[in-house]
Length: 139
Image (cartoon, rainbow, N blue to C red; front, side, top):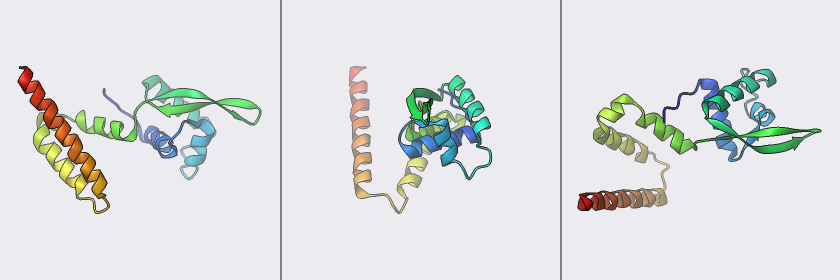
């Protein structure tokens, strides 16, 4: 899935991810109030483009003052979005093994990574190994 978003669209995605819930246009503007690009008029244009791209969707309504406002949610989570950005890169696709190892190494070198996160990564790697072994047995 090719995912291309503008800088402003990415800021909208980030606001929704940070909130952890669907947001109305007004809530998005409020969360991005320090960015002069986001005002009532422009946010609707940005949201319309994002809806057309399928990057976000309307996820219910919320009462605000006397009217109801649409709530917007993302189609992809933070991890899915960023993984897709890496996986659709041509260089990554040509040399996955070496690049994946480098990315993984850089990520786990983070000083703030907790032991439970490393344990979860070990489990994921073991599951993938088992899956690949079963695929090889089926051939």
